[in-house]
Amino acid sequence: ETGVTQSPTHLIKTRGQQVTLRCSSQSGHNTVSWYQQALGQGPQFIFQYYREEENGRGNFPPRFSGLQFPNYSSELNVNALELDDSALYLCASSFSGELFFGEGSRLTVL
Amino acid sequence: GQNIDQPTEMTATEGAIVQINCTYQTSGFNGLFWYQQHAGEAPTFLSYNVLDGLEEKGRFSSFLSRSKGYSYLLLKELQMKDSASYLCAVREGTGFQKLVFGTGTRLLVSP
Image 1: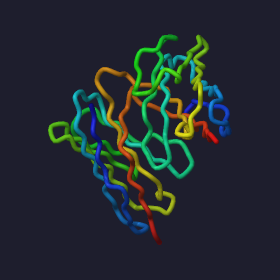
Image 2: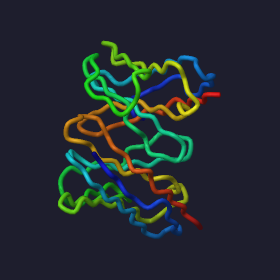
Image 3: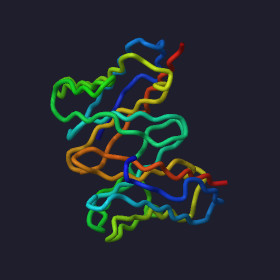
Image 4: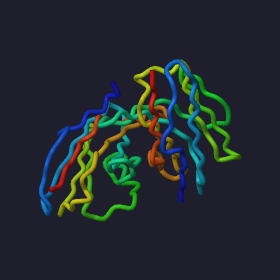
């Protein structure tokens, strides 16, 4: 039990659509980050939020955006979905230097 | 930037010991993580090394040498449930949570 929960666990979208993925972490974990994991690859850093502000971003286009809320929940939004966006999306939060992942949201784009 | 290298696949038998190596090149280093990931599931935290030396947690141990850019994960008394991918990840100094992952080592434990 990592204290990081994500929803939905699975979803299917079509190319061009938009998707919102949600994450809830433990109270006091004021930094949250999102990762994309394609099949057979390691997770890739998308961005992180600290106190509701984005303060670090990986090599992802602007159609990947996020929000963090005061209640330690956060969202990942992806616009204009492409087939290559099919992946497992992981939310992570940190405590004492250790980074814990939620169970992930598996997105399939058709 | 970062470059993380680890073997693609390894096999071992139940009850044995296996060592999974990871080498990295980095422009900034702030810790190395090992995660276990079963197929279709999220990564599970195993260990975190920021200083040189060995960290032991039950059947799992992790070693770090910062001067050599090298780490290993040691799994003892292997069990069938240890069949999984093992991910090595390095945290960059400038990003509190930004981890750069290798592609993972798929370990198959046979009876």
